[in-house]
Image 1: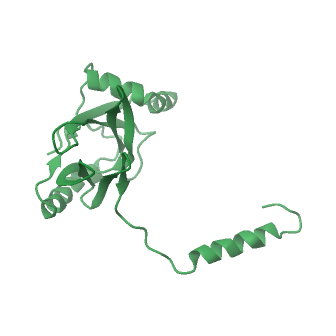
Image 2: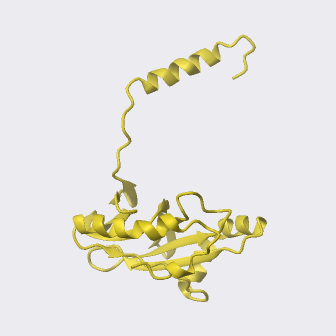
Image 3: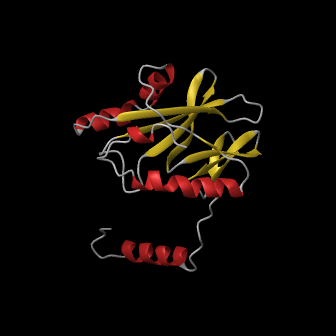
Length: 184
């Protein structure tokens, strides 16, 4: 399902990525036929070159930590008519990846340049047959659906409202402002 999975460095926790694949496949099936996005090492390709330019800051940060990052890339058409091919990029390095694994960014071409339309998602990525605004919905980690809105992807997971949280924060901030020494 995820081509290039064997390329994941052992130093980076790959357990969630490897074991999340089956749950993503099951959730994708609930949404209709989903197409997995394969991220592979394509060193020397045009996609790899673009990915390295777009992620130069992350590569430099990894180098400062003496990491030798692995750049994985993939591409797939996002629009229902097969146009608007996306570039999927994941930079793997111990200093860049956390307990949720390594994050993936998604780019599309706009006016001849790559533009980021989905930032730092973790887990297997699948393209769903459903569309919004002419672009296919993206399923991340089996349950997190992203839809196209206003020239970017937006998350459909709604944060649960915690009753009284906003009022509590405002009250705390007001108390901090009233400190005699003026410090916060």
